[in-house]
Image (tube, rainbow, N blue to C red; front, side, top):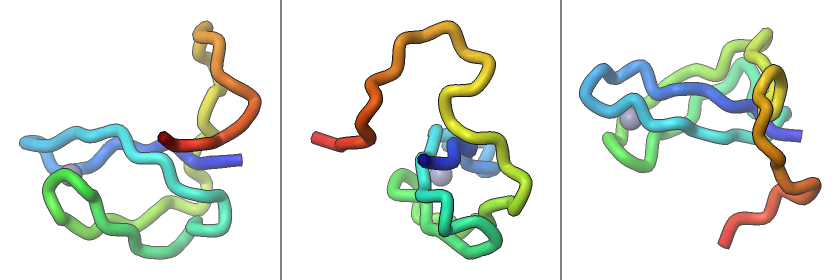
Length: 60
Ligand SMILES: [Zn+2]
């Protein structure tokens, strides 16, 4: 399961996906290089979205 969050950099706003275990830790945005903290109560990816998401979390 992954956590989805949006980069707080207003000039970036990239949607990032980080593993559940990254909650409360710092991650680096690959787009702007900024460091952001993953909220411990961040919503999980795939909630309240009508899109059909694949069952596996595999990146190309
Ligand atoms: Zn960013």
